[in-house]
Length: 310
Image (cartoon, rainbow, N blue to C red; front, side, top):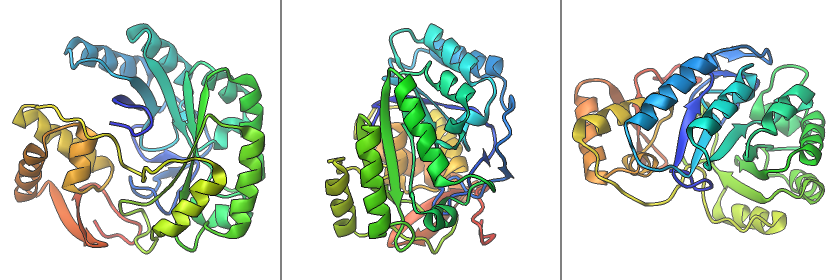
């Protein structure tokens, strides 16, 4: 489930942690390939074949098909084919793209993104020192250029833009950044602004969320009006057989650490079944647990934090 898109079916266009950024808060772990090079990292045909197979299994309706993955989906040179193919398979369903917006400086990428219905870009700071420290982009990417790319996209795009700003304590929560982003949002006029903070461990373990007062002040200033924290969705539940839950939990934890409650929300599954699945996977050594900020987070065995801790 997605707090912004409802029941969203996610597509991974990268197959690995391939990104133009290496954000300190990223919940999927450190970027393996730090690049701005576009390529067919996962072939469109392979993605669409898997999507067609999923549809044939009759899982029920979805509110959106969302292009994302372990890194920056706009780096996939076949993104346009994926959007067109998804629209044919799911006519009338919202096609959305999650992006860090760095590729919007490329007119071709902007043209491809115009094929979507909703684009969800992020922009965490317009203060260059903060941007470099929090997002750790490929050399040469600067926040002013990213902002200009977003403004150019706004002129070309007929769909909706949901802007996300993620705050980390002492990293990008400065008054200077708030002032610059407020002025930028007035120019961009997105359909929605989501100001969020960390709810799961990021790539760098010492990075912390901002407190509620800071979050509320930013939301009021930017007019987002959202009370959602990063990672939260709706609370709908549906029963799923135990084997499928175990597979789904394993796959989800391979991407990012989560609490049992977050897993239940993300998978739209019964919390007791999720808890039993996690316990079974932990017993088999497929997941590990770690306490962080008073919560127990489960990690897939392939998820590695920046300090080398599995």
